[in-house]
Amino acid sequence: MSDLEGKVAIVTGGTGGIGKGIALQLATRGAVVVISGRSAAKAEAALAEMRQAGATAGFIAGDVRSSADMSALAEETARRFGGIDIVVANAGGNDDEARSAQVRGPFVDIDLARVAAVVAENTCAKLFPVQAALPYMRARGGGSVIFLTSEGGRVPTPGQTAVATFAGGLIRASKVIAKELARDRIRVNCVCVTVVRDSPSWEAVFGEDGKVSEQHRRQYEKIVAGCPLGVAAPADIGRVVAFLASDESAYLTGATLSPTGGLTLH
Image 1 (cartoon, rainbow, N blue to C red):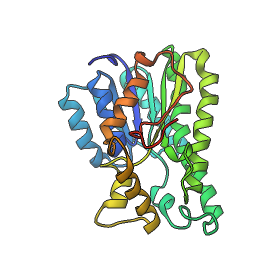
Image 2: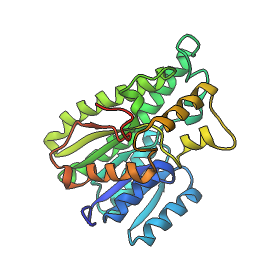
Image 3: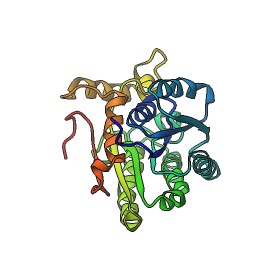
Image 4: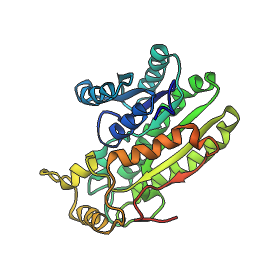
């Protein structure tokens, strides 16, 4: 497939997990892909796979929590490759903090100040790269923005006050942004995921050094056991994102898609 030939895409958090799966799908469809993250060493494996598929790919370091870093990411991408057509806001904020018992747990027990900080940090991590890229997307005459977030923003799950607040707010914000940017022919859509194998969240739950609470682990086990189409791999999410990035979805904006394998239905 070459339906993204000539397009330039940024994927935050594209060095591993879901982000890497998305970057590879965009690359195999012909896009020039810039992945961003904090580790150049970690990026090498993803870059090698994309280049092996014949794609042009690059890495630009940056922290999604920094507006200055995301402005530099957009500027350098446009300088190297001539513009920006696609932004995939995949990376979040501090995952370890978001998984802590003081942030993810029963409402009666959580530290609301820490919850509020996680919500703010994660929201900015999604919005900074998009805002930074807009001047370059407008100059191209349009484009596609895809936010990656949690299905917890659509379906309530016990212990997920922070996730529901952050992801639910991002879903609503994406619709506002979609309305504002439609005149610029920039489409804005959301993809909400649940458990995805071979991702940092998967490793935090099922890896040798489990980093989550017992309740958190049991929730994941229940999802794995109950998902009708099985657990998603990063490539499964990548194919949905590639569709939203392509002209096949040219009339779709302000939408929220939940590729959860039948676990949730809307």
